[in-house]
Image (tube, rainbow, N blue to C red; front, side, top):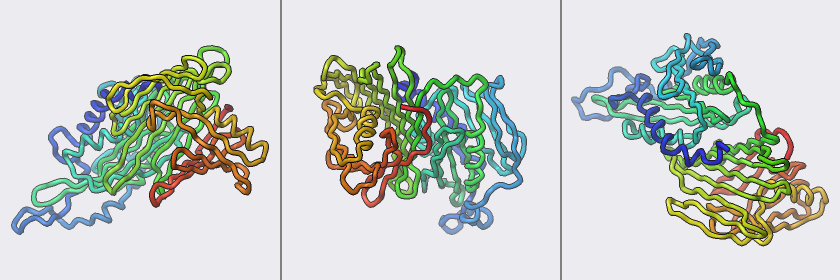
Length: 427
């Protein structure tokens, strides 16, 4: 399956592409982009100051007006969409990427790009930040939303940066939005201080209305999308899908995660991960694949294969070092689909229960299965389950099929909440 190894396969290419994006965005000569704003600094007396007074707050809050819906389409009409714009958008092509410049009546256009492959969402955003950091000084980098647009998760990021100019400082604001689809990836950027709502409206419209000419038919039997919030900040999303396997009764369960966790006003942890599970007709796990990346670099890549009753072999890399071995799992390895089936049955009975299952989480321990406890106590809400792994507990509310509708746990002084945005089909 394409998603199985896309993070591992795309890291070198992603780094090159994000460098190219940053080059286009910030200019080849290292000068600030046309959308950057000049601001007076505390330069020594006699130094040349930026001309005119600069009101940062007013500039930061400004928005475009008078935009109207305009059609756009890709090279050879490969796709179509509609976006708000002040004039007709222009299409160009660079390195097999469609580039659409959307004017909004200001110094800088909103630029959207169409990649004809699946990228790593967090890694792509990180790449642009990393490759532009040598030209500017970022003062704030903030995740600014996760939403479903056209039924597909999109994530948004806002920044403010400063740079040196003759006699003072310049200020700019880079906004980004990314949507990774089954066949394409969409990336929108705007490099101009302010116009935050304008940018979000345009990128949302582009994502929501995007229609490939030759869209592939869906083969999934179940789809679920969730959003993660840390306090009041959207910090990521999960997209889970079930598809038929190669033989009758076989199934493949794919889970992709993107997280942007802020650790300070200008520092964010950018992580992508993918999990793929293949089941036989008896719903027994046959193979598993786990790939995790931090800042566009692969930190874990593990493959798991069933070797017989209660035995699985694993092989891969952890932080760049090869690992392999044999897992002993006398009770099998429980995954999301197994767990859901068991919880459905237990909760339907209505009695308190404690269910201990063996699970495999290679980022915690690639060489062993881990006992995870699912507990429903007397007096708990009807569909509440407390999940305990090692010393961490998570509370979840599950649906009639045993799948989590929402879950939450403490991260320091804040609560991380995962809430379902959408589900379709059947398990």
